[in-house]
Length: 178
Image 1 (cartoon, rainbow, N blue to C red):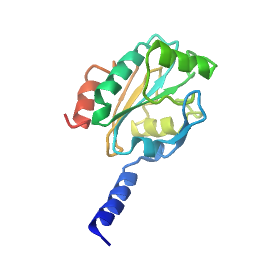
Image 2: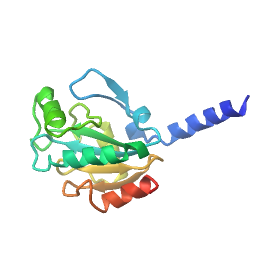
Image 3: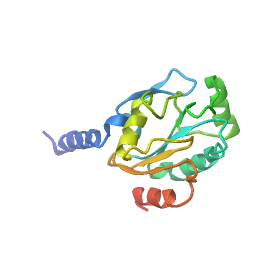
Image 4: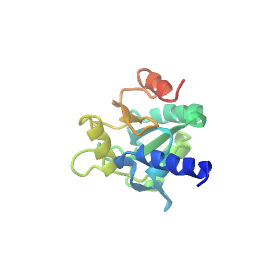
């Protein structure tokens, strides 16, 4: 076997080993039939997972999340948005949710179908993230989880934590190797 083939095999095994179980799910894009395996989508990246709501007082964070994504995607940042109506501030219609995200806030990072983010009905992704964060499940919209390239949770941040302020900003820069 050639060395390049061996490195390819070793590299792919290492990458899949770094994918946490909670990312090993397939999710549908918002207002689309397109589906993505989160392990494949996030492989080798620093990931910021956010539960969102179009009509929340914190919805201005969409702009900050988009700015963060644009500023750091070339360095390996992936922002993933998950609309949720767990706090009664999301539209019932996916078209309206997509319109708010894309037209009103210019969101270009991946947004997925509406999911539950807390309690027994929580999507496996959010159950896994909460477990990794010692039970810190979202208690409001715009809760953020930062996951390193190695698949390990770096931090869990409540709604009041701005995506562009410390400590999240500092921990993101460290995870990106800056």
